[in-house]
Image 1 (tube, rainbow, N blue to C red):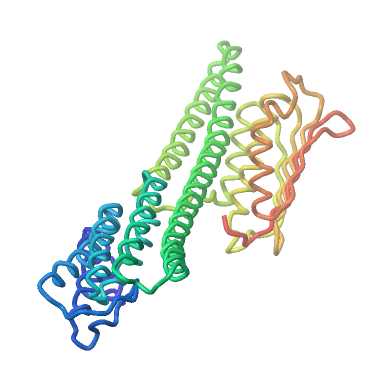
Image 2: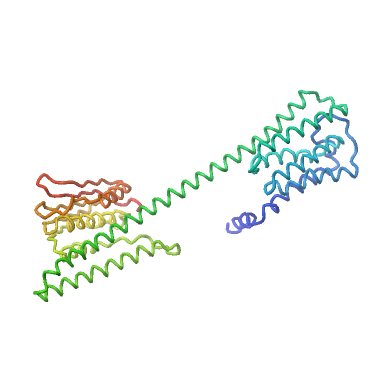
Length: 384
């Protein structure tokens, strides 16, 4: 299997001229086979004549340029057309006449510039050939010449269709690549927001509290230690996220183990936020991206509680079901709000998108008593 794959790959690495040469040689060899003499294209219906020295030149003009039909399509078409004209005027009627159709398809597919000028020049040359054949006594008639011209137009049209299809496929691939890059940038921005916002918010709140603890060295030491631990945790998370941006890094995004939810809650408590945490059920062995999404929901909700309801009672409830994880984080409205609970809404919007991708449901809003609640239902087993 490996060998069968290596052969096409090796062939594609050769220059395009080398890859196109075998077809040119094959048509040339077929033209000199005795059994195929006078069995080629017969435009003008002139009486055939035996092959002579000029036949070799004619066959070479018609066939060998096919080796450059993709690299220099205009030159290929010009040389093949000259050879085809000699072939018909001398009435050799070689099989090499079929090279004209190949050259037309290739020119229609690969010619990038002066396409209209090429069509006009080729049409004028064909009219001149038709007149010359008629003067030599051709019995083809106008109908025959027009029919052949339409056939050559069809060959050019096939090449033009192939060119458009190739361009459409390239545009589709470019669009897919742009979409993939945009999605990846969005995912990275969301992860950075989740990691940086939470840790930095906790550090800021803890640092603000430390300003008022200068008279209590033990509490000040505890607060500074919490700030240090939070900073180290932030560095660890950022380092892991940056590792994922390395093209040579094959690891999947890290899924926080269940114990990290408790560490997250404890970190928020150290920042001065009273948090009640309850967890029910046992996490499933395979949760896909559900466990990470649940962690981010709790993380963002606690970050918002620290920022906009510092000191207010916050309750975190996580339930692990057989097919889904449900998360509810509620914050009382008795705290002092510095801004709206959602802030810019970027974090909540990212959570809604993350949960939605996994087929879950997400909601966030104020309660009737003025508090704020975040709820999420996340199916387990969905791909992350």
